[in-house]
Length: 168
Length: 462
Image 1: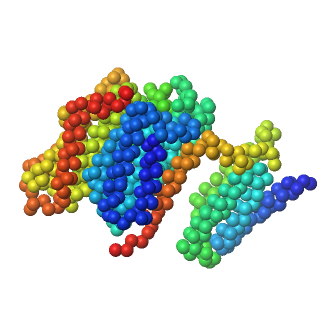
Image 2: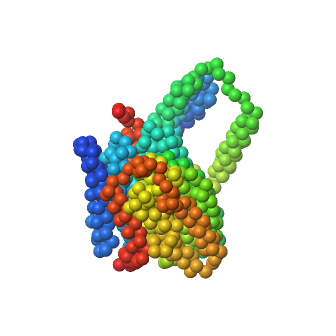
Image 3: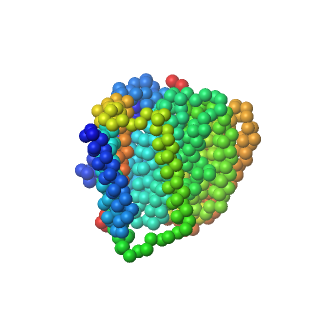
């Protein structure tokens, strides 16, 4: 058994296990913490696929920013009381079954057509390498890249203007 | 290219100056200096094609005399706003330098959307134009109405930007060469792929939102009404015309070949916009809100550029931009100095402030489209371009009818100015002598353009 296959299995078990824990945790804060584990495992998968940039961005954006946002919401609205009964809505259940069914359909179709398409291979392909990304970004897309700095600068300035306390 | 770099640079300079300079009048003069500088470098590129920078733009921006002339109009209008309402911009709040810096960043966005050749730059330009605008709308933090307006504008604006991104993604996926370049979309003339149609409709809706074309106009009255009046002045002039220019540029280059297929759609939008804008404007009590609806109505006329899309329409759009913006900054400039912004506030202005009354009247006449003013020729160019296309003649008739309707609410202000007696001495109107003269200068520009539009349009053909 190759080391990559071993890693793949390990990460997959980790991802699925943590995802199940997200669902079955009683405490919403625990759910969120387990979700972070899921994201780390998926980032590991990206690394195996040679997509370094995607892996890093996944950790920074999802595990970093969005999870903090989730935590804030849970804590601010004081949702982590375990005795709150989840609302059992008949219509919601039907919708859940429907969306889950669609997801299942997609997965089944993908598996059925596995022979026709080129399955993703581990450790080959260089589209996700940071080197190539950097080269494209600074050759073909250098103008949008530089100009987005104006956008960020004005947004930061706006945040300061709106957010700063003004003493009279 | 000059304009893009210089506006961004001057924004940064003004921002840094804000940390060191304590003077209270410096921001205004620095802003004027900056806008003159930008105007000059832009005129340099316009007259001699001389760009100060050779950047690896990968053909993502394209300058021609058409869009550089338009940019000259934009910078000229901004200069007039600074001249007329510079003091009011400083009065918005405590961060005087920052407001001007933000305005320069917006101008950078405007320069982008009027020269873009790539959908990525269109997106960036629209964002640079609107995000600082959300901030300016809400910059009067103590005012609940302004806060509501800013929030509304932000939520709806982000949503429409989302639609635009989705449209761009569809276009990227559906054009045969997978390109973001609008001059290289390579759509055929025959039946369109479904994805292209979806992408085009999404872009059409989001651009219509940005320029407040009905039925995407619902944010306009509240936002125009809630924002500080000087910001409204900027919004209704520079932002609006820039939006239209980007709209025309996008649809002309990317979807020009299938013009006949979406012409009907534009015709329907024109009728809806004229109807909603003009009819609702009649029932307004506040002049500021009436001007917001009138800006929707004027958008209907500017849409004729997209409907006709010939040489006359291009000239017409530049002329319309100049005429509409001049008149609009005039009226909003006066409103910014008034305590009472209902029709009653204008009562007897002709007796107490004769010069101010004269300037305002010329602006209102131009908005109505009375001959000898720029507004008349602008409307004439738009309608003539539509006649040239030879289809949908009824559209021109409808537009003329609604132009007649618009006379009602514009003349209501003029009637208040000259035929109503003032309450007291109109102390609510706080204008200086120099303000009146600048307003008269704007009025003179309107009449000059109304007599000889070649004076402006000639720049397009050097």
